[in-house]
Structure formats: structure tokens, C-alpha cells
Image 1 (cartoon, helix red, strand yellow):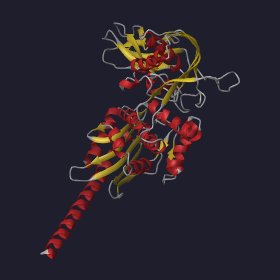
Image 2 (tube, helix red, strand yellow; image 1 turned 90 degrees about the vertical axis):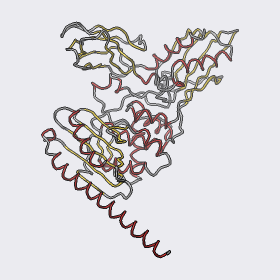
Image 3 (cartoon, one colour; image 1 turned 180 degrees about the horizontal axis):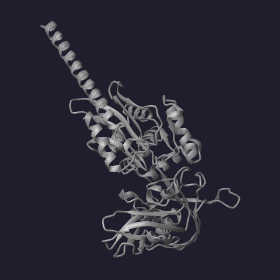
Length: 476
């Protein structure tokens, strides 16, 4: 009886192996047939297309087209940064923004230096968590001040930015991006995701001028040259904000649609430190703490470039961010470029003592080189994929996805991947680029890891998306 049972088990395993092999072969054939038609599409006449599909469990190649060709990956590059951050910082890593003081408290009046030591926290002032909101942060800071019997602040606010480069936006970002919310750079002190809403009122007719209503949050240092005009109703957001980091004059160009009393576009804060200090003054006032203080909002250094050091500095309050895995959820799910750029600089700061994009990218490249990805496959200029100068191979992305699947933090990483077209995958889109990379679980048990990138297509991006999804559907 035992021999018969063993033989039945062997037969069942054999049937399972044959069934899986047949399914895999069928998927391979379907992909080859469909791709030969796909690449002949008129939209891709001048395009470069890369697609690599492997069996997630065995590593067997199911389909390969230009797997080792470098492509502009757009936001699928966030996979590279995300996985590296888990490994180099740890999923439980948190940012700490420290508040301290040096001065004299007479009755309830503080005179001296209120020192803020930022750490590059991209979530400070974000609306995505209760603990990071302005109200929550300033409520806790107010409580700490009241514990020290401080109700009036006279003196100086010192923002000590001494272990972080002053350049916020990476080299390689284009002019029309940096003034808009997705082009927000990573400062050592970030606030409200370094973004603001700009409320506009279109005219009644096509060609009419557009009125600026307000910014939220308020930005006292910013002036706009408004060249926006009104387009036909339903034409969408075709407005661009041209504004460099630390700039005080922004140019508004393009169009917004008629047919609404209010139309909102989003921009990148040019000086988040100043906006933070203004928000702090308002936030403390809600708790009846009055602040009259001059601010050094930039580098926290004297003219010599040496850090300001206060002899009798005392700790006041430390604000702690959500954990990295929580930050990564929004980085991947909502594709927030700021978070990726902050992660890159934080990796450099934690490993080398100074937060810079160049050093962070070098550490990330070396990390993946040591795990078998060649330097030529990983030519990265930033942490988010916004630069059109980035180059990644489909093979590199698939290898990183496979690496991630074997790590203890994988469930958190996988959960952060958006669900699109019923596939867990990261998407990417910049001018002329559409990309997807992730994991597909087939209905009959097949599991695939893939990277699919198209550069220099013609026509509608949404049409390209639908065609790419239709091809990926063959693996379901």
C-alpha cells in the first residue's frame, strides 16, 4: 500500500510539472506572437521597446526583448531607490527633527536662540498622517514650550542645516518640471511636502486672462508673473509654473479650462524653511504662544561657513517621523518624487555624514553592483526617475524585484506597489516614456516578474498604456 501511495504521489507531481510547463510554454508563445504585432504598431515606429519577463519562482526567462538596453525608466526607477532604502536604512528608520534652545527665561518670556536641527524628513507637515500634520507638530512643540514656562519667544530662530547640501533639486531635472509640485527638491528642512496649491479663476471666454486667488499655504515671499490664459471647457490642466529653488518670482504660462469658478494647480515651495517658520508662528499662536524672532532660514552657518555652535544649548522637543516603510508606501503608491530624493540624500548622510545626491547615488550604485547588476545597467541621476537622462535596463529592474522578493521586508515593499490593471506594479510616465515593472500572478498558478519600457513613442500616452496593459494581460 505504501508503494502504491508513493507511485501515485510521483504521478501527481509529474502531471503538475507537465501542466506548469505547458502553461509556461503557452504564455511564452502568446507573448511572442502578440509582441511581434505590438512592435509593428504605428505608434512605435520610431520607439525603443524593452520587455523582460521571467518566472518568479525559477528565474527562467519567459520573454526577452532588449533586456540589456538602457532606457529612460521614468518612475519605475523608484523601485531601485525603494529597495536600496530598505536595505541601507532599514524599514524602521525614522527621521528626527530636534528643537532646542539657548537663552534666558524670565517669568514666561524666553530671550535667546531657538534652534531647529532638521534631518531631511520629507513628511514634516504632510497631511498624509495625523502625526505629521502642522497642527499635531505645533501642538506637541507648544506643550514642550509650556513645560519650560515659555509663552513669549524673543530672539532668533536658528535653522541648523550643516550636514546636507544646499542644492535641493538634482542635476538633470528640466526647467518646466522644477517649479511644479512633482519637481519639489529635497532640502534638509522640508515642509508640507514642499508643495502648495495655487487657486486660480479662469475667464469666461477662450483667451481671457486668468486671475490668481491665493496660495495654500500662504507664501509671503513669492510673486507671480501671470501669463496664463483661459482655454475651452474640459481642456484640462495645461498650466506650468516656472520657478527655480530659492526663487522669489515665478512665471505662470499655459492654459486652464473655462467653466469653473476655481481651478487649482500645485507648485513646489521655493523656500520651505521660510514657509515652515511662518507656519510655526501661526501654529504656536493657536496655543497662545507669541513668537517675535528673526530667522536665519537657509544654511545655519556664519559667513565663514562654519556651523553655529551654542554653548548652553538645551533640548526642548524631538519630532519623529513615521517609519521608512510607511514613508515608502506613499513614495511608491502616489509616486512622490520628493521622498525618493530625500531617501537618496539620507543614505549619503547616514553612511558618509553628509547628505548629497551625488554621494547617495554612488552608494546605491555600488550596493547594486555588489549584487550582480553591472554599472552600465544603472546610470541614474536622481532617486525618483524624473530626469530624462536616467538609464536603466529591464534586466536591472527585474533583478532588483527578484532580490526584493527574498528579503524580510518584502511584504511591506509589495504592499506599497500600486494595483493597476489588477497587477501589482509601479508605473512611470515622463515625456515620450511609458514604463511598468512588477509582479503578475496568473489565474492558473503562474508567477511572473517583469519590466516593460517604451521610449520615444508617438501619439497618445493613454493609448500606449492600454496597448501595454493588453500585452501584460496575457500573463494573467
